Length: 569
Image (tube, rainbow, N blue to C red; front, side, top):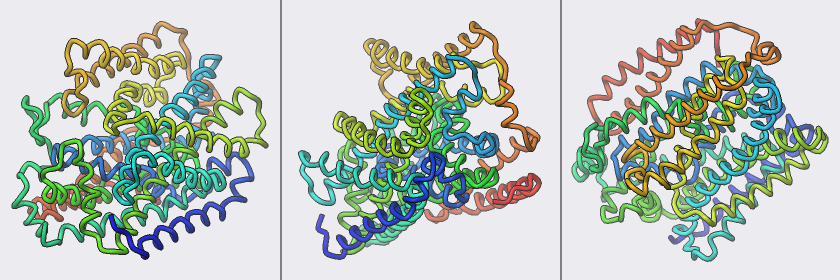
């Protein structure tokens, strides 16, 4: 791809601005572990909400959406659209609680909720398992996508891709280690706007190009099923728009509450919990997560989907494995000089916002939940050790990247290796009988079930390896296996109740459960109707009027319930 002076200048200015923001927050980050990992618990909802959206907008996301649209049409996005249900559940049931607990990481919650050595073991194990192993996998798949982007943009040979990624990760690690969460959040803000503006510009240019011919040109040349927002259920799987009833149930009825997935942990967790705990107060915590759900699912997807549809028309002969590259080919072939630099910066922004969050969040686990917990309470050294760990995690993730081959393989592994864990993460807030041993079992059981399905059962029936979109039986088995395992361990081990310190931390405003459920369900309807209204409007369909009516009714209900709850964000 040919880049000119203005393209390189835009990239250079972006890098300078990123480093400046990191240095600007350096002194505030050095004050304490709270300042380094939680920004002094003083960050406003809008910055936190945008930061969450930016983190989930990785370099691989537009490519993944392009691949889903190519295989299943617009309806293929239900692979991640279904997660809104769990996200909104976190907003109204847990966001304020996470801020009220006044802890540094969500793993610190474990020893507040449970008691004894088993709680300490669970906390330490999770710190290494999620903070290092799972974190490295996430960073690795984001690196893998970025390597493809660098290759297409700059023609970098395969032998030099890892050294290039080392340079990019080093830049991210430097400003993350220097500025702490404050620097990460506020760089996320301008990185997000760069990324989304770039994608909108690309979508407008390619959609209105003579080669595409606008929305009507797309409809004339692409199959009708491509534009369906909802999957058609049936037994004949594999024609793009048709999925089995089991798959639809897995996506809409099971995955949102059962699976641990980075950025969508049931009940809140990971960097989402970190953002909630760093908010100014409980209302800001709720406002941040509410904004995140709206922006993530309703505002952001359409530029990606439009480009993906255009890529289907423009590059119909791409092999299935290369369909995701259609997004990059659109950038290569339709952007004028200068705008290519803007889109390159957009992808850099998406990449860096994700990596910086993953490094800071993973470091918080290693420092707070492993080093300080088991090696002495040396809080005065926490920031220094955090900076060292940031660079160490960077090197581990780079090594893991070198071992990876496909992004989709990592996605499937993460979805299934967290299947069944999600339910206990929700119920532990409400059922005092659950103990730390049950959580240990719930964390390990999916791994054992994954090995059974993919390395034992699949030897006799290859369909066990097809993945949730083609055949969800592996997913269902892992959820059932894990759920039964942790329920049995709960009843077979010593009975426990909620510890008094845990109950004392959660004391405060008591909201009726009915009110929470009403807000949860009406907000889910609001966001989905917003998503569908926008999509049908872009596609010039009369259905947009119907969804506009649903959106209006849902928005009025949500506003009324929020006012009744006296929440202003």
